[in-house]
Length: 187
Image 1 (cartoon, rainbow, N blue to C red):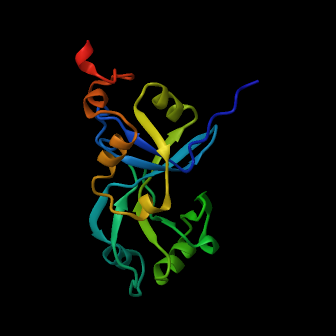
Image 2: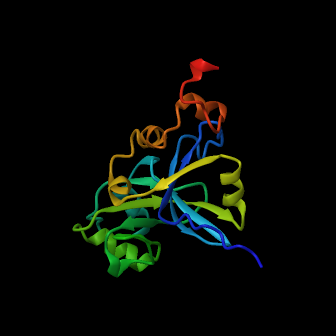
Protein backbone atom coordinates (compact mmCIF):
# COMPACT_ATOMS: atom_id res chain seq x y z
CA UNK A 1 0.00 0.00 0.00
CA UNK A 2 1.44 3.37 -1.00
CA UNK A 3 1.28 6.43 1.18
CA UNK A 4 -0.73 9.25 -0.36
CA UNK A 5 1.31 12.30 -1.30
CA UNK A 6 0.93 15.66 0.38
CA UNK A 7 -0.82 17.96 -2.07
CA UNK A 8 0.72 21.40 -2.52
CA UNK A 9 -2.33 22.83 -4.32
CA UNK A 10 -2.80 26.39 -3.07
CA UNK A 11 0.83 26.66 -1.98
CA UNK A 12 3.74 28.58 -3.42
CA UNK A 13 6.99 27.02 -4.58
CA UNK A 14 9.87 29.44 -4.08
CA UNK A 15 12.91 28.47 -6.17
CA UNK A 16 16.19 28.35 -4.27
CA UNK A 17 18.99 30.33 -5.96
CA UNK A 18 21.02 27.22 -6.73
CA UNK A 19 18.26 26.30 -9.20
CA UNK A 20 19.89 27.44 -12.40
CA UNK A 21 17.17 26.32 -14.80
CA UNK A 22 16.33 29.61 -16.56
CA UNK A 23 12.64 28.66 -16.55
CA UNK A 24 12.57 28.76 -12.75
CA UNK A 25 15.51 30.90 -11.60
CA UNK A 26 14.20 33.14 -8.78
CA UNK A 27 10.57 32.28 -9.44
CA UNK A 28 7.54 31.92 -7.23
CA UNK A 29 5.10 29.35 -8.59
CA UNK A 30 1.52 28.90 -7.44
CA UNK A 31 0.52 25.25 -7.39
CA UNK A 32 -2.84 25.02 -9.13
CA UNK A 33 -3.20 21.21 -9.03
CA UNK A 34 -1.18 18.42 -7.44
CA UNK A 35 -1.93 14.72 -7.03
CA UNK A 36 -0.17 11.35 -7.37
CA UNK A 37 -0.09 11.53 -11.17
CA UNK A 38 0.87 15.12 -11.93
CA UNK A 39 1.38 18.67 -10.74
CA UNK A 40 0.53 21.96 -12.43
CA UNK A 41 1.66 25.42 -11.39
CA UNK A 42 1.78 29.00 -12.67
CA UNK A 43 4.84 31.20 -12.25
CA UNK A 44 3.58 34.42 -10.65
CA UNK A 45 6.58 36.69 -11.09
CA UNK A 46 7.27 36.58 -14.84
CA UNK A 47 5.15 39.28 -16.50
CA UNK A 48 5.69 39.57 -20.25
CA UNK A 49 5.91 42.71 -22.35
CA UNK A 50 2.81 41.62 -24.29
CA UNK A 51 -0.51 43.12 -23.31
CA UNK A 52 -3.62 41.02 -23.19
CA UNK A 53 -5.12 43.26 -25.89
CA UNK A 54 -2.20 42.54 -28.25
CA UNK A 55 -2.47 38.80 -27.72
CA UNK A 56 -6.27 38.82 -27.96
CA UNK A 57 -6.16 40.37 -31.44
CA UNK A 58 -4.30 37.27 -32.63
CA UNK A 59 -7.07 34.88 -31.52
CA UNK A 60 -10.30 36.92 -31.59
CA UNK A 61 -11.75 39.39 -34.07
CA UNK A 62 -13.50 41.60 -31.49
CA UNK A 63 -12.01 44.22 -29.21
CA UNK A 64 -10.54 43.17 -25.89
CA UNK A 65 -11.98 45.19 -23.01
CA UNK A 66 -9.53 43.74 -20.44
CA UNK A 67 -6.23 45.41 -19.73
CA UNK A 68 -2.90 44.31 -18.32
CA UNK A 69 0.03 42.17 -19.31
CA UNK A 70 0.19 38.47 -19.96
CA UNK A 71 2.38 36.47 -17.60
CA UNK A 72 4.66 33.56 -18.49
CA UNK A 73 3.20 30.72 -16.46
CA UNK A 74 6.01 28.29 -17.20
CA UNK A 75 7.80 26.36 -19.93
CA UNK A 76 4.94 24.01 -20.87
CA UNK A 77 2.90 25.47 -23.69
CA UNK A 78 -0.81 26.11 -23.85
CA UNK A 79 -2.90 28.86 -25.38
CA UNK A 80 -4.14 30.81 -22.35
CA UNK A 81 -5.24 30.34 -18.74
CA UNK A 82 -6.34 32.63 -15.95
CA UNK A 83 -6.41 32.97 -12.19
CA UNK A 84 -9.47 34.90 -11.05
CA UNK A 85 -12.15 35.38 -8.40
CA UNK A 86 -15.29 34.36 -10.34
CA UNK A 87 -16.51 30.93 -9.18
CA UNK A 88 -19.06 30.69 -12.01
CA UNK A 89 -16.27 30.67 -14.63
CA UNK A 90 -14.00 28.23 -12.83
CA UNK A 91 -12.45 24.94 -13.89
CA UNK A 92 -10.84 24.44 -10.48
CA UNK A 93 -10.74 26.17 -7.10
CA UNK A 94 -7.09 26.66 -6.15
CA UNK A 95 -7.77 28.13 -2.71
CA UNK A 96 -10.83 29.80 -1.17
CA UNK A 97 -11.94 32.55 -3.54
CA UNK A 98 -9.21 31.90 -6.14
CA UNK A 99 -10.05 29.96 -9.30
CA UNK A 100 -8.21 28.57 -12.33
CA UNK A 101 -9.69 28.50 -15.83
CA UNK A 102 -8.35 27.25 -19.14
CA UNK A 103 -11.51 26.64 -21.21
CA UNK A 104 -11.77 29.02 -24.19
CA UNK A 105 -15.40 30.06 -23.66
CA UNK A 106 -14.88 30.77 -19.95
CA UNK A 107 -11.73 32.75 -20.76
CA UNK A 108 -13.68 34.78 -23.32
CA UNK A 109 -16.25 35.67 -20.66
CA UNK A 110 -13.51 36.57 -18.17
CA UNK A 111 -11.91 38.91 -20.71
CA UNK A 112 -15.26 40.64 -21.23
CA UNK A 113 -15.90 41.31 -17.56
CA UNK A 114 -14.07 43.90 -15.51
CA UNK A 115 -15.45 43.34 -12.01
CA UNK A 116 -13.20 40.56 -10.74
CA UNK A 117 -9.44 40.46 -10.26
CA UNK A 118 -7.89 38.45 -13.10
CA UNK A 119 -4.37 37.50 -14.11
CA UNK A 120 -3.84 35.84 -17.51
CA UNK A 121 -1.02 33.36 -18.25
CA UNK A 122 0.59 31.80 -21.29
CA UNK A 123 2.23 28.48 -20.50
CA UNK A 124 2.43 26.57 -17.22
CA UNK A 125 4.83 24.59 -15.06
CA UNK A 126 4.17 20.86 -15.15
CA UNK A 127 5.59 17.81 -13.40
CA UNK A 128 4.95 14.11 -13.96
CA UNK A 129 4.26 11.51 -11.27
CA UNK A 130 6.80 11.86 -8.44
CA UNK A 131 8.87 14.53 -10.19
CA UNK A 132 7.86 17.46 -7.95
CA UNK A 133 8.23 15.34 -4.81
CA UNK A 134 11.80 14.45 -5.87
CA UNK A 135 12.63 18.14 -6.45
CA UNK A 136 11.24 19.01 -3.01
CA UNK A 137 13.35 16.27 -1.36
CA UNK A 138 16.44 17.61 -3.17
CA UNK A 139 15.79 21.07 -1.73
CA UNK A 140 15.07 22.82 -5.05
CA UNK A 141 12.00 24.57 -3.63
CA UNK A 142 10.86 26.21 -0.42
CA UNK A 143 7.11 26.17 0.19
CA UNK A 144 4.56 28.47 1.78
CA UNK A 145 0.80 28.95 1.79
CA UNK A 146 -0.49 31.27 -0.94
CA UNK A 147 -3.04 34.06 -0.67
CA UNK A 148 -5.22 35.88 -3.21
CA UNK A 149 -3.48 39.14 -2.34
CA UNK A 150 -0.12 37.78 -3.46
CA UNK A 151 -1.50 36.25 -6.63
CA UNK A 152 -3.03 39.55 -7.75
CA UNK A 153 -0.39 41.80 -6.18
CA UNK A 154 2.72 43.34 -7.64
CA UNK A 155 5.00 40.52 -8.89
CA UNK A 156 8.20 42.57 -8.56
CA UNK A 157 10.31 41.54 -5.59
CA UNK A 158 7.96 38.58 -4.92
CA UNK A 159 10.82 36.09 -4.84
CA UNK A 160 12.90 38.25 -2.47
CA UNK A 161 9.92 38.80 -0.12
CA UNK A 162 9.23 35.08 0.06
CA UNK A 163 12.87 34.13 0.57
CA UNK A 164 12.96 36.46 3.59
CA UNK A 165 9.55 35.35 4.85
CA UNK A 166 10.60 31.71 4.83
CA UNK A 167 13.52 32.64 7.07
CA UNK A 168 16.25 31.53 4.73
CA UNK A 169 19.18 33.93 4.51
CA UNK A 170 20.23 34.51 0.92
CA UNK A 171 23.70 33.06 1.61
CA UNK A 172 22.27 29.77 2.89
CA UNK A 173 19.95 29.57 -0.10
CA UNK A 174 22.78 30.28 -2.53
CA UNK A 175 25.01 27.56 -1.13
CA UNK A 176 22.27 25.05 -0.40
CA UNK A 177 22.78 25.04 3.38
CA UNK A 178 19.68 23.36 4.79
CA UNK A 179 20.04 24.34 8.48
CA UNK A 180 22.18 27.46 8.90
CA UNK A 181 23.13 28.24 12.51
CA UNK A 182 21.35 31.27 14.02
CA UNK A 183 24.73 32.96 14.53
CA UNK A 184 27.30 31.85 11.92
CA UNK A 185 30.07 33.70 13.75
CA UNK A 186 30.19 30.97 16.41
CA UNK A 187 31.59 28.47 13.91
